[in-house]
Length: 283
Picture 1: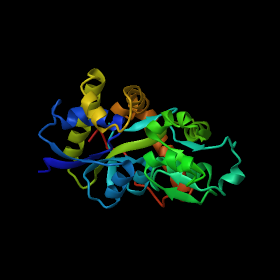
Picture 2 (picture 1 turned 180 degrees about the vertical axis):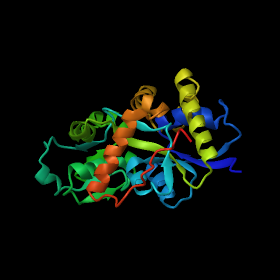
Picture 3 (picture 1 turned 90 degrees about the horizontal axis):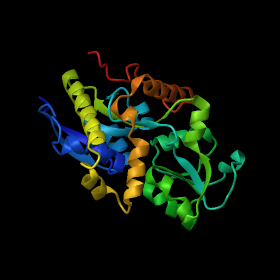
């Protein structure tokens, strides 16, 4: 039986908050144990493309390409309003869409949801430079690139560094669709037994609920992996990315994901997606 599974998530505060109880034995894991692979989300995306991980946090953009290999769990997702990536630069240029295509833009990885939203908003911007999300602000400041798409805790720090927002890609998405932004989800290999998939979904939900009920329990784990981040920023990060959708997607969450995947297919980002994106909770 598959009692030991590889589990990938990022060192970001929201993921550490969600998975703390699960990986530290604070809750019932129903006989399953997990080998943790902690990596930046784009590295996790790459491992999923290679099929080398059983359960993983994944950008929704990457998942759009992998729906035939992985199915989405109902628990653990990061969706929300006001949580989207920002396009930032050093000077206060407005939103001259004709000019954006002439700029070099740092993106936090080809398969990130941030790049997906940026590409939808600026389809003519082709001069993109992939780099680790935490290096983007400095690359803009030093002039290595003209502008950058920032995610995670950089939303809270860019202004202190003298950087300016060109556009909030999350606000743009919300105006376009009226839907929450699907940033990252937790997926599991379709090839695993259905019983295992449902166990893992229950365990992750239990872990999120435990984290909400015992917010101090995960503090050591969160702070151990939060590089150069003060406690207030860590807490903002968790408050922004862990919410009701992290416990269960619900109809609203599922609609947002369907809207994104329809746009991905219609804009030619992916050829097709599996009709059964979501784990069937009735099974």
